[in-house]
Length: 374
Image 1 (spheres, rainbow, N blue to C red):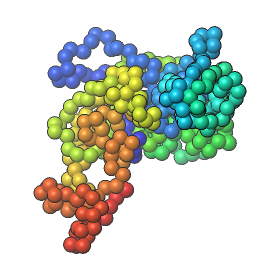
Image 2 (cartoon, rainbow, N blue to C red; image 1 turned 180 degrees about the vertical axis):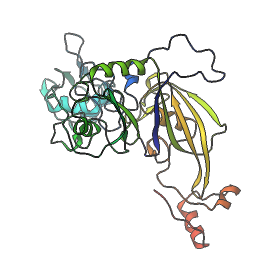
Image 3 (tube, rainbow, N blue to C red; image 1 turned 90 degrees about the vertical axis):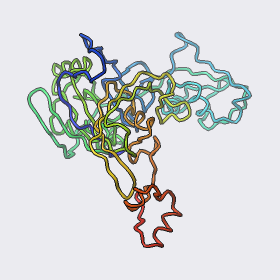
Image 4 (tube, helix red, strand yellow; image 1 turned 45 degrees about the horizontal axis):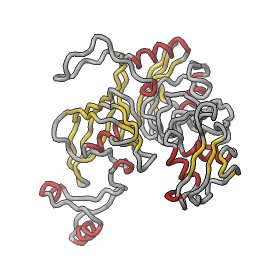
């Protein structure tokens, strides 16, 4: 998620019903397990052996790759329509619940047989093959390690700590050993160096971690120092006693000062790195926003929003804001422009804003400031 989204604050309090939202239920509906670890990192946030995608939340801890043959058939038959496809691309398309990383690992470990022979990921299919998955991915157990990394501790007592995670920092590693560069510089590594002892409920890979933020999202995170506080924090999150709010800088001005977006979110069928309100196995998602400030700048109209999410779907804020025409600034995956072109405030107010590199060149020729921003 771009650096312009920030988890602003986390307060342990009851959520009051919004005006016009109807009476609140007597008992809060519990969160699903995958909502507890919300807004998961978009790089590699998957626990080895998880059946969910690398980009999905890893609240589900079910076993790893396709099920064993004792449970269900792992034999696929290609057709003429599949001719020319790479083996790995074919498997990713045919097994939507198994990530691209897991497919590569299955092939590398010789667990994918094409016509009863091990094959490479780059094998081009002819359209008449029998493909068999012989077993799950075998992954070595992982363990987080301490690193001396600067850590901003906002609050601390004997039970928990609140830390300010910077943008660009992954919460915890997902695969490979300590020598793997992806496993260095994580928040967990910094926590282990700072606190030494943390809760063990999440396993050796996620000590102390109760919830998460995207790699490129900055914001506050609660960390459990022991198992008792960890379980109590999980209970507060799951019963919606914890209120989380976010700040996001988005394109364009919303028509109203506040509003709600309700749209089920699932994996985008055309791009596995994206989520979509028309995605595969979409699940209910609700986001509320309020305009904090409207900005009129030489680079267009922007709005600073405060958001509250009732659910914790992967990339929820990004997907919902993009779906109503207000993508997060810098979030090119969900429709924000990669390059911001300048306009004088006068041009912006008149509605004849610069919209192309050619117009920017003409503006410079007439003495207007036309520096672009990436």
